[in-house]
Length: 125
Ligand code: HEM
Image (cartoon, rainbow, N blue to C red; front, side, top):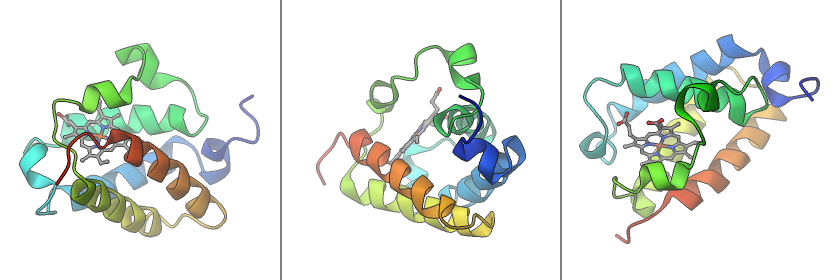
């Protein structure tokens, strides 16, 4: 059902792009995240835009290009500690604010992202 999705409510693809830009700007400067991310985040950001589009109820762009998301499996090569989970979520919280997301969408999105981020942890401190 494409009506009544978060994706539609927040302004669609353009808003997802704004969130992703604001997010990777922060990831690229975060001391806890720099060691595991590529220096050039262009391609990472492009894939994340496809993913978040479908994650929030938009067209299934990520699956069309990359197949089944299997997010936990795709993150196994990277040591994701609780500290890195917190850093990721901190960057995302600020990105949602910078992109001008209004309530209740900002909280709903952040909570859904928090559940997934918890699921990505694969390494103790
Ligand atoms: C890829 C880290 C959580 C979605 C990546 C990559 C790293 C990473 C290092 C590889 C970047 C690259 O080589 O281009 C983290 C860390 C997280 C986290 C530290 C903290 C919990 C999440 C969450 C989501 C997500 C919560 C989704 C809601 C993605 C996507 C990709 C990706 C879509 C690209 C996968 C692909 O190659 O197709 N992440 N991630 N990540 N991450 Fe995360």
